[in-house]
Length: 231
Image 1: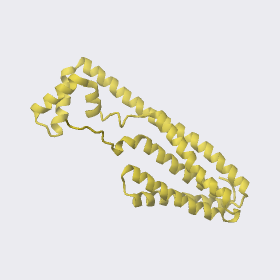
Image 2: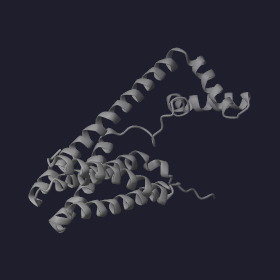
Image 3: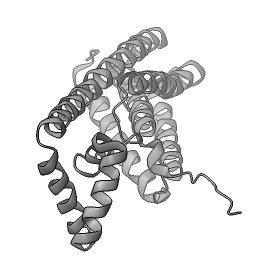
Image 4: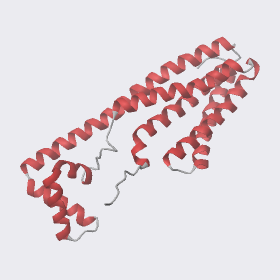
């Protein structure tokens, strides 16, 4: 008797992995940039900590709200497309069958086999077949607003906590350099971790996030030095 197994694919992680990486990256970059800008303005540790905590809370809530609204919009679009497809299946079944057949022909099946496949899939789950093969909506890729919002908020908070920990431990006079350097290390590690989880080249991912993080911190440090104020 043949043994069956369930394959694990990296695409199954796309929904939460994208939100988690975005949240953690933004948490490190925005919080580190904020505290570097404030520290560069020659303020004390207390002011830097207050700014950092405010940035952590505001950023986590902003990420959660942004992800929820964005992914909810995607979910609304998916539901609207499915409702339209359901209506077309009820009112124009033959046209929908022809459409599904044409999709399989374009993918390489001869017309006879494509028609047979379309008929069998339609008999089993017509809406599911059209959702997957016509609209590109699948269980793996479907929008999950709450999951995306929670993942982004939680990972933003974790990412933001890393430069805040450095602020607590590092000497005040070296905060700008210490936070900047350690945050770049954190970003590189995050890029490599995300790349490993997604099966992408780790060095390329690390360099990508490190470059943009360094640019953000450099600009905010320059603003802090130029204006000497919290921005």
